[in-house]
Length: 279
Length: 200
Image 1 (spheres, rainbow over the protein chains, first blue to last red):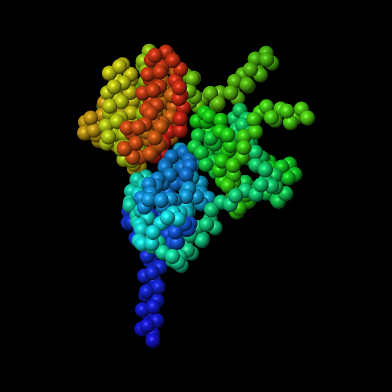
Image 2 (image 1 turned 30 degrees about the horizontal axis):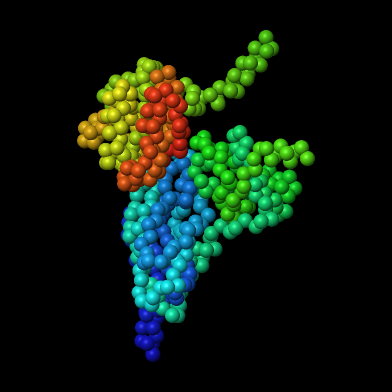
């Protein structure tokens, strides 16, 4: 009986293990592909992630790397009709360097996405492949390159890998949430800064903005939070490389060091402000 | 008298702001020693275009442009047209990219690099004066001594040499435009690469 149990446990472990492609051993950081489903039905959508693990002290980069570095780059190798959604990035951390501030991740990080199976897919085995390039840095940087692949069965009944499901579920929890519309975010371009304004009746003692785009915000500059009742404003110093006025200010806003939100604040033109002042 | 004092006070307030390097303004003068022991000052090259290229031979982004021969090609092209090209090394001793003069001269020979000179800046004085952030980080000074470009070498901010072919080289574009008497279309860009390994 106990032998049977052991072999059952072993089988389970093996099955779970298959959810992830074998991590590629490379210098100071490793990457693997995590696919939630072991079998997917035609027309279904499942979760998927790219999981990075860095050695202590090493980091990889966010979509906006900041003053140096480079975000991971993906080239998917997929069967015809299969598509991958846009990558969703967890909230990054600030990394100070001798010359500025970078944005990235240390330890374990999962970039989140989805896998869409076409309705016309035929039952059988397919392979999800990824050509991945990324930069791992400590005091020095090492470019890394690996090819990952994971098998996936197309069947009439779906099944999931429990361990992959758990990894992706906790990864999803680490993604910044959409900012509630009640916050009404707006951005104003001033001569030397952006003013990011929003409305919140909650007590806010700290707010930190991570710009999604390069060449917008001076990454090392302090961000000043001001409150006028419910109206909050965050002054963000313009990057010295700022050239083109964006349509909106996109990024991640972390409130009270805890709640991370995706922000897409439309730019309020100075003409509109003047008009509203005249009223 | 009072007005003079106010003016002096105002100047004092304004001066720190002027100290930073800005495109369109006079490039700060410097004196530095090259890998052959010769001294160079920016002032002595007035009347010529001067390119400053921040360098770290161990950095993947520097390697991208040297292993592919791209940087050497640029150095040869522009020095043949009378441009003064200074490669600057601001890595502190014990950090990536720090080299002795002998090591650097061996590297130049091995790589077929052709800058006018390599300025050794292990204390980071020149790097901090220009606020050089990455390797590479490129600056261009026109014959009048004004900074006309500050930023990346090109518009493909990766360490992959395969990206050089399709990239717009900002240094070439700025030099061509300025020499033709037009305004530099992209006078600043976010420099990309490894952070400069300054002394801590």
